[in-house]
Amino acid sequence: MGMRGVLVYAFLAAFIDPSWGSLANCDEVRKVFQQKQIGPLNSLPETPRTGSDLQVCLSRNVTCCTKKMEERYQVAARRDIQNLLQISSSSLKFLISRNVAAFHETVEYLVHQAENHTHAVLLHTYRDLANHAAPYVGEFFTDVGLFILGSELSLEEASQRFFSALFPLVYEQLVEPGLSRFAPAYAECVRAACRDLAPYGGAPGRLAAHISHASLPGRVFLQALHLGVEVINTTDHVQLSRECRRGLLRMNYCPHCQGLTASKPCMGYCLNVVRGCLASLAEVDSHWRVFVRSLETVSTRMHGAQDLEHVLLGVHGLVRDAVAHAQRNGPRLSVQVHKVCGHPSRQPEQVSGVQHGNRGRDSIPLKGPVRNTEDTLSNRRKEFINSLRLYRTFYGGLADQLCVSELASGDGLACWNGADVVKSYTLRVVGNGIKAQAENPEVKVKEADPVINQVIDKLKHINQLLQGKTIPKLGTLDQIETGSGDGYSGDCDDEDGCWGSGNGAAERRRIIKILTPENADNHRYHHPQTKDFDRTDSGTKVVQNLPLTLMLICVFALLSW
Image 1: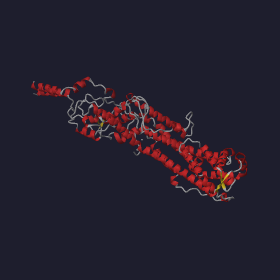
Image 2: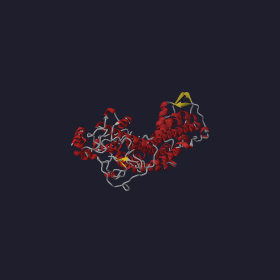
Image 3: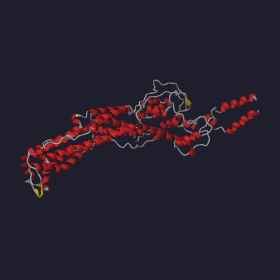
Image 4: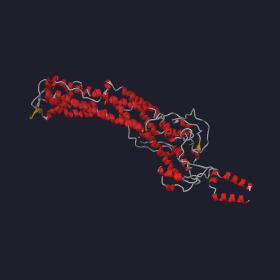
């Protein structure tokens, strides 16, 4: 009996893995599968099986996975990583979006204040003129607000249009005052003659130039913020390559197939997989750093003649002085208008309450509007820049952040290395970026993401604008105006490992590099690689497909011998 026992144990050792029977049932796998809403439960096997049809989650042991489960796990792995990307960037995206809204709000407030103050100054200096001029003042400041917020309208034309519309009122009330209004046809003739007569001197051009000069840094600043949101939207929904999706599946869900639902990947293993998947995003890092630094630089330039707040709230003085200039040159203007339009034609039925003399001009102008010093454009920009500095290395440390804070196992704990639960990961850990992935043992990266490259090009352009450099052949700012970032467009064969984009940040954590190519252990630990997942070793397949009944017959024969 001793010899027969030895033969039995020898047979079992040769043909059956010691852990073959360790997976007693699939109850825990089924529970997690249902909790994560990965797919219908009818795709799960009732009991552990051989798993010879699996493509990625290969194992010499029995498994609780089917091919359908493997496919659903891959979808879940992709969904998980994209959710993590959106969570990681949510605070950054909110910071920029909130500042865009605050910029719009503050500009609208300042334009409204400038309009009200201009109207109030005209009202106290030229009362009747101000009442009729209110619509033209409102129209001009509407154009100013649109221009500051990025519209490509001509501010010079808007200024000339405003002063031209104002000229018939100035002429009838201050140059040739009468008891009634000009007839519409005569008023139109006076308005049309304004550009040639230049009654305000160079005031229209100076007003447009002052506002335009002060608005340019703010326009570029706002344009840059919109682009920042687009960058985040695009990187949040980066299209993952086939190799990456398989790597994420193997890292996050293949242990479930063996019943190891609570296991987490080793830190080095996680870094290799996620750095491979997000290699193109790491290429954004250097340009994003320049972007943050350039926003800070342009913010510091917004003072003096480029202080938009100061310029807007000084418009009333230039308008008042322009009207006074026309009034002082009344005799000359009368002669010129008579030559072009003839003598005034009035409407007798409309009696004007014009106040003659110098009373209006000698009145004291209003003081500037009282403002909350905490809500100025300058203060809001400073607060924003101080917060944005915390995110200047966001893309350089994104993969590390995901592994350290969300995905990987803690130090000293048993962890999953892609094939089994071990004490530590022994393969080389690569760095960030496309070039570093050439030696990545977990994810093969063929090329950079073309959509991410487009975003990088846009960052380069806006960085040049922020730095005050001209961009040959770029044209207006609208040529690098941001899109919605709500999807990827273009033809791409995902099976070839190409990439895409899409749309979308948790409190920014400081990332410490746990493993780098310089300090990681270079010893190799063999486990199935992606290229091996589409074929299985013939010997292993024979063992996996050996019927249980045949083995029992052999054991019975040995014991009976």
